[in-house]
Length: 179
Ligand code: 5GP
Ligand code: MG
Image (cartoon, rainbow, N blue to C red; front, top):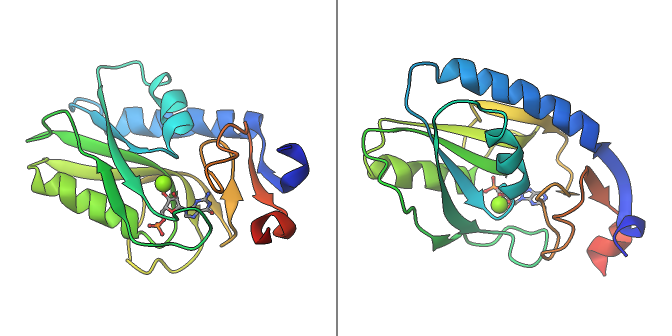
């Protein structure tokens, strides 16, 4: 069962909802008068971007890019691109949306790929940003919450492909991580 694997809930559904409202308001202001193409980094950003776009009452385009790291556990491994963009981003303002910025390796690589496709501007929006000196010296332009360097699950974030459907963000019991 899911619930009994949880150690501590960091952000409950209501807290996330209120914060997503605020992030959406920031994005609306920042892109006033500009075109907007939003790119979801699969799979972890799916719940976040689904909630976010429904709070953006303005024209926008939505695409997905596939990136997988942390294959099967909590230790990062090499990044694999699993799906490329479908939309043309040449000359566009692109906002990349991901679940979490940890070392920054994933988003740095994705930003470079989208820039090389001729985007006019590439900005980053993450639900969570870890409070660690990012190895890649990269920061999100928009973020939901800053968290200590713990491994978290829920609201899109997985451990071995489970827990993405939890409506809150939480840490897992050490016994679950070690099992
Ligand atoms: P980075 O490349 O910034 O080190 O890591 C980014 C990716 O690693 C995220 O998109 C996410 O898939 C995964 N990741 C990093 N930290 C966590 C975490 O605390 N929990 C989960 N579930 N995934 C994480
Ligand atoms: Mg991810």
